[in-house]
Image (cartoon, rainbow, N blue to C red; front, side, top):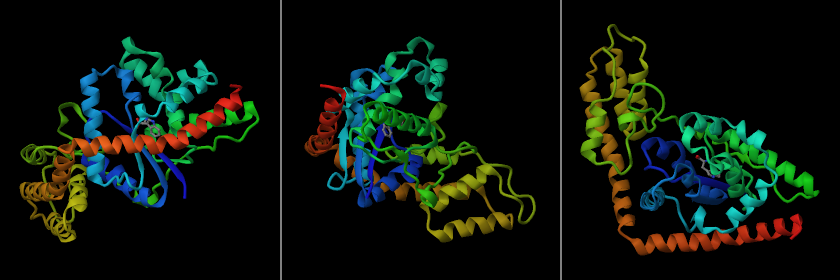
Length: 328
Ligand code: TRP
């Protein structure tokens, strides 16, 4: 059994890509490992959200994760801001983090380009805070996407630097959690890459989205001009719609539309109607759960309180050890 830490971005709602690409794996992981799932609301501060928005989006993300099957009886579920040991460890680790290496991080350079008027120290030390999130529980595995691998590599550098500097073996090196073949790519509706937030928002289907809006988006999904001869190759936009069908429809539905494509009898309008119906019936129970949890404030409060209490145990133990090592 590994110790797993995962920070959940507190911005925005979950879409089907998050669900099939990550959250479903978390649900499995929590049964096999000691999992710490937290909402990274300190990290969210780098972009200066207004307090009401931050509070609302943290709550929304928590509700959606719980609705998807993250189980607070099995995993530690908490808000980053409820564990006071995290910012203290972050401050201590900052003493061994160098400007040169922090400036070279791709996500930092990206932010410097995109928001030149808000290059704050929190942004620069984002990877240090992330390292503190992971090390506070001495985690060895971190389920992250490709975009976070460099941060994890930095975390390993910080671990080795710390252990070496103080002549200790206090932190283990954290590595990406590898889902292997379980990793599913969920395409979006715009005919290219994977499902994600986009300008206009037409590319992603959100878990809490209104059925009429989902239907409209799917009916507008990018297609092509259709197969011209039997067994013509499948273009990316159509392959994407097939991939989505595969995720939400019974297996014979996909077989049916693939056959219709192969013999040129396919009508994309029908395919989209089918996809829309199947997405909606897939989401219906999930939306029901989201509503149910959302209306139960006492339960949400209890999850946050108990999660913080449980996660504080290992956090306090680690910080105590670190303080001693560093000379306090
Ligand atoms: N940086 C991560 C992201 O943007 C979120 C995150 C913060 C995180 N702290 C973490 C992920 C610790 C894993 C472990 O997705």
